Length: 356
Image 1 (cartoon, rainbow, N blue to C red):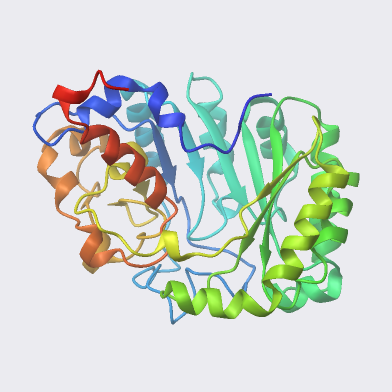
Image 2: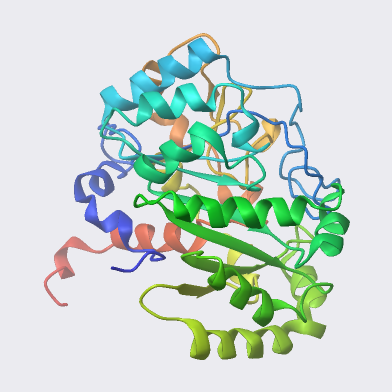
């Protein structure tokens, strides 16, 4: 198995990178699209960035929004025609509570487009689970609590939901197929003592990968670092032990638990990843990324309420440069490091290119 988590994937699409140059009118389709089909989620995670009042993410999100079935089918047709490589379903809400997810993945499974989803795992069963198991590329389950009591505390769900999710994951792996099952373990002060033991338990039920990340508590990078500082070394020690004891060819542990300063401050004035990995919201608006979704004042690229996604994408390249990250994106950004790498590549002096 090759490297799953790498910032270098985009460099396998050289034509796409060259099309990002502001001096050309050429527009190429996105490589990857996030679709947020619904804003409904029965879990009420206390750290959820889409529902936290003190975070900019999701500030204009309406819980009732979802993509109508007819429009979703049209979007999928556009994606296939545009030769987009991959689609990830995410929230907003939980994609597995979108009433037309089964119809959507049935349709996608008959195309060359790869698909994946983020989910809380409670709805991972039935035919939709079968399709993901045999036709999907990956699933990632978001987790925090390590037993029924703690899980209910984090998510305001009835006790027993944790057991249900764990059973769903174990049953999913028994379906066979090639879908890669990962868990995103969100660490805060409360669960920081349980990282090593919980990773071991996840390996025992057959999970393929665990990604450990810090919860986001503020729009300010230093405030997040200050929150995690009392438990930081303890978590890092558990991660080191887990990787030494458990990481192998059949089980990956990805350590994304680190200080967050490099994800907040932006010095560049346009966002390459807007054209590489845009977001289609449940409100049928287009956003540059999941960290700017449902922020109409600072993050709206445009709307497909009255036009097809294909027509929207190719009608005017200028819309891709109207968002200035140095002004409106000084908050958590998953694409920040990747943006800087792409911009450095594009800014290379052509006269000195040969002096490698």
